[in-house]
Amino acid sequence: MDDSKQQMPDNVPKNNRGRYGIRGSSNRSGDFNRYLFLAKTHDYILFFTNNGRAYMLRGYQIPEAGRQAKGSAVMNLLPLRPEEKITAVINVHDFEDTKYLVMATDRGTVKRCRLAEFSSVRKNGIKAVTLHDGEELIGVKITDGNNSILLGTRGGMAIHFDEQDVRCMSRKTHGVAGIDLHEADCVVAMDVVRDDAGYVLSVTENGIGKRTAVYEFKKQKRAGRGRIGYKLTAKTGSVAGLCVVHADDEVFLFTAKGYVLCVDVDELRMLHRDAKGVIMMRLREGDKVTAIWKGTP
Image (tube, rainbow, N blue to C red; front, side, top):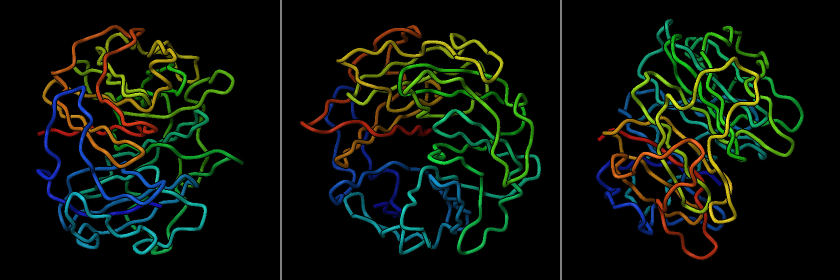
């Protein structure tokens, strides 16, 4: 079940890496945090689901609550279908015609369309992307049309390509190949590279992570196999997520049991693309990292 709530940013205190984190919310069994972002009450919040549909709320329509509150069930705020779950949330101040949305699926498909196509979303939602049987939407990001895209897979592969390699399409189209996946692998994360001064932060399900300079992920043409982004072992587990960060950013790690850890990016030493990483978050028995989120203090 997905929950939604407003809370003040200082409700999530900062910790050093290697800690257990704090309880992020009083989650129900099987429920976990995944999204945390700053929004004004009159912003537009776009919710995208695994089924490729989009819904919209204004900031003031989401109830405010404290850090440990459960929040309101998203099904009470949005008319989700029984099999739908939220897989991406975008905060929009205004629908500029020069902005784009880039979407990625677990099967490595990417699509780019104009943000303005989502300026009017019906209460019962609209189709954001056409998916094949069994395919799921895993990520959506806003771009300015001149950025590059980074995809990361559960098996530790990554590919970096120019946004303009993906032509602008209409809202209901399927998209094009972003990465050629190895058998049994799937895409778990997508982010936008806006400059060469950043880092790629990768975190595994067992709380191991690292930051690597963006320039180590050399650009390729889309639809290639990509490069090794993380050298995985039994200790690290599979990749849980990745994001593009800068030295002054904060990073939030979320776990399946509802714990959250906030650390400074500059606390993490630089490691190469195929390195194993260091302990970012210690986990309680049976827990695992499910998502990461970046923020700027």
